[in-house]
Length: 230
Image (cartoon, one colour):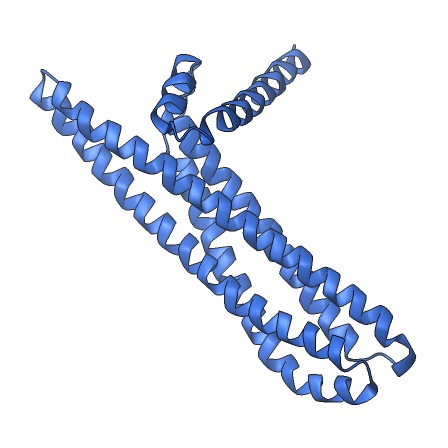
């Protein structure tokens, strides 16, 4: 019985992913954001569900970026200990780390942008629907919940954007080192790069700290959002 329940849950999650992806492809090119959200709601996926999913994806993207930047730092450190004959090989490995780091950073940016889009639509709809209440008591309760959710979301997006802002300086400095290594494939280049290790390491460690804070805030936000009772 438990196996069947897990299978049904997996199928439901997979269906959500497929429908979500198809709808994004269908409506993103048309600029029909409201049509997209309307269609998803008819299929049983409300904006709060989409927001939780996008926050989850943003959190996961940040986790992947954190691991990639740690890998890049490790590769950068090892590159400084190589012999002259291995320089070309190590440059190529370091450049690959940079390219993967850049890709992960772009994934984080895209996920955060998606979180901002769906949250804006959710809060706009929620605010408009407050006027539909006939019960002032229920309207007040819903308004309080909206205010609480907005406050929690504001904290979430603040730390997410802070972590996002940290990525560009790290990538820029990382790219500088890769380019310098590319243009100076010799032992002297390695010697001069060693003086940059402390700076690069400090930047990446600060980024990882901010990403960890953002990931924790995302977990807190997801846990606080109302769950479906289905």
